[in-house]
Length: 599
Image 1 (tube, helix red, strand yellow):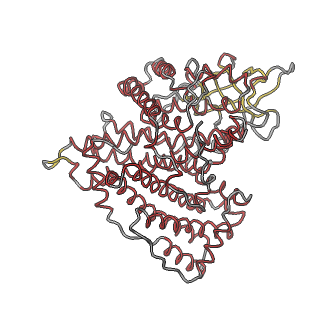
Image 2 (image 1 turned 180 degrees about the vertical axis):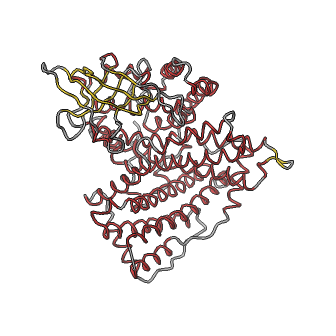
Image 3 (image 1 turned 45 degrees about the vertical axis):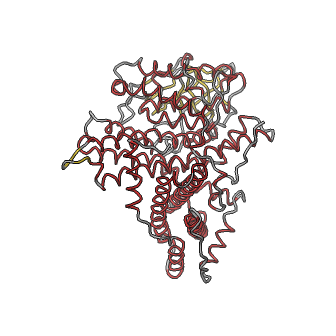
């Protein structure tokens, strides 16, 4: 019987507690079975998608994507998270993260895949009755049916609960008639099943319904003309007296908004992982091109400016991997722990996802912005060819942009993560204010000058992380006191605080991953990873300094401001590192391997 590893900290507690390397999961720990599944997924992409990328994006053959989708179902790729009893593979949460990661390199198809396996299937898996699961999950897991998720409306984007779509009970009490309009619906063009959110009578909150295309009363606009992900189906959907049996209500009346929020939590962390395949692909293509392209008689990969770009792509991708799989395993461990305590499976999964909603938002924001950076630098490495539609960077650049918008814009997610943290602190679920008060008292005390044993790997870096957490406690604690109930309207400050959270979580995740990897492989074998860790932490400190200064300037004045700036200087003081040489070390290793070689 396997031992359940309980997570050492609860969701959001990384800001006030230390985590040891042994307590996190790292990418390098995936089992052979999981790696084989990932390889099968990669083979599918290389065989079925990459050779047809232009044809897929042209959408000249409407049957092409549905046929590829069904092949993915035949391979079991659509049922990774669906239990075996419903025709799926019943694999772990982090396994589903890994497949989302690999699919991320599939361009437009990654959106098709994610919309079906995530927001299209999971509402039924987590909230459906046994009859609903038995009826629909086998069809969704095998690809017999395709699913989509109808939440967004023309006047209800980020404010999803303000939707105007209505569901009216028929006189005989057997059906609901749904009327309304939804937009930006991925997979709508070939979907057989729609998860639809509507309000019944004058309800305050949405209710969710499982709607079959065969129910009738469903019409659509033509495919949207989009900047990127052109090969994915995106349409407006109109419901005109769509007759839905009452037994197709999903969960309880007015529980739709809660369903939407919790399913988006899953979507966010899956999106964080889902950018990784694209990041690795672009970084690897950039390494290859830089080796082939010659200027002034030499390959451009010999130039320091190019090496800096290649290395920085790797550093940020490595960080994203580190935080996504750390959070993914924490969620999985909590699911298993709650199930072992007797909580029903679906409820345990939802509870674990809700608890780590902050980390899910961090993964989404960090990942989407890493992808944007990587594709932008990929275009730059390719130079003029990068701007050509005949080269792969043009498609990658366009496809990446949507990631900062869907599953909640990055601005919304930044404010959500801070808002969730403060609410949990107010409820006593996270002991945030006591450590914040301790840091506040420390600001006016005589600083202690404790020496750090630098002979121990990452001892100095871990000390820096402790201090960076004090920066958040100092700035966040003071902001909560000074702005009180007005803090959520101070969106710029909220976003500054979110940036502190993101960089602290990412930098700590990188350090812990590399430390654990050194324990597995030895320090000599991990020199490139050690270099990436040092670079990422150096950059994180710089970003934290900037975000903290902006926030401090926004709500403090006079002596109070001076004290906080002195505290900021104290807590962000770190040894200078030669990032140029560290990046060159990373780039040279990438050039030697001919790809992104760190996973």
